[in-house]
Length: 411
Image (cartoon, rainbow, N blue to C red; front, side, top):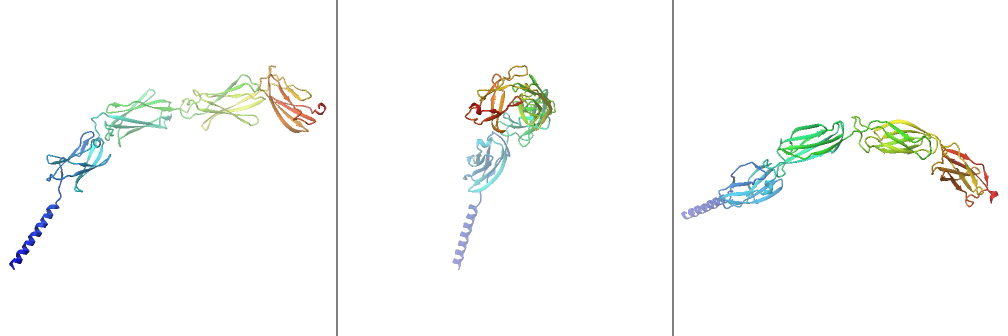
C-alpha cells in the first residue's frame, strides 16, 4: 500500500513538472518601445528602438508607408533591438504604421508621422489656367500654388503664400494660406484687354511671372462703307468694302483675324459673298464690278454675333448698244469692237454669249471673251448643217437678236 502511494506521488510530481515547463515555454516575449516619439522631420534619420528582457530573439519590423510596405531586419546594440527606417522612406511625409513581429506574431505596434522639413529651401510650383480669357469680369483664370520643402513634400496646412498679379497700372498683392497642400485663387478678367502677369511667393522664395492674355469680348454692331474707281458696270474694276473699327461692349478693339462676311443681294435676289478679316479692328473685302447694270444691297456680319447697317450700291451700264457682223458666208460672227463709257475699248475678257436657234428651238449656246474689244465665233458647216439659223447675242447686259439667216444658198 505504501509503495502504491509513493508511485502515485511520483506520477503527480512528473505531471506538475511537465505542466510548469509548458507554461514557461508558452510565455510570450515582450518588446517595449524605448522612445515614444510620434513625429519626425523629413530628411532626418529615423530609428525605432525596443527593449526586451530576452536577448536571443530576432524580431522584424513591418512598416506601411506611402511609398509602400516593407519588412526590416533588426540590429542589436547594447541589448536593445534597433530598426533603421530606409532613407527614401525618411524623406517622404505622411503617416507611417509599424508592427513588430516575432515568431510570426505581432508583439507591438504603433504609428508615427513624418513632417515637412522647413529647414530646407522652399520650392514653389505654380499652375495658371486658362491662359486666355475674355474681358468683362465674367471669366477668370485660376492660380494654383504648391509650396514644397527640399524633398518635394507639400508644406503643412495654413502655410502663408503671397499671390501677386499685375494688369496695366494695377498691382495686387493677396495673402493666401494652403489648404489640402495647395493655395489657389480665381482672378477675374478686367474690362480692358491686355496681358496679365501673375506670380507667387512663399518663405521669401519668389516664382517667375506667368502670363495670361485678356482678349476683347465679342463684337458689337458696326458700320460698313465702300469705295470704287467709278460707278460703271464694266466687269473689270473692284469695289472695296470696309468696316468701322469693330469693338466689344467695353470699348476694346476686337482681336485681329475676326472674320467679317459681306452678303450682297442683287436686284434678282441672287446672293453673293465676300469676306475679310480684321486688322486693328477693321476688316476689308473686295468685289468685282458686275458686267451689266445692277443694284447691290450689302450688309456685313460677324457670324452669330454682330451685324452692320445695310448699304445700296448702283452700277451703271457702260454701253447702250454694240455692233456685230457676219462674214465668210455667214459662218463667222464678229461682235464688236465694243466701246465703253469714254468711247474706249472695253477691257479684255468681257463675256459675249451667243444663243443659236433653229425654228425657235435652241440649238446651242456659245461663249467667248473679248480681245481688244472684239469676240469672234466660227459656225462650222460640220456642226451647223441646217438651212437657216437665228442668233441672240448678249454682252454687258445688252441683248440683240438677228434675223434668220439662210445657209442653204452658201453650200
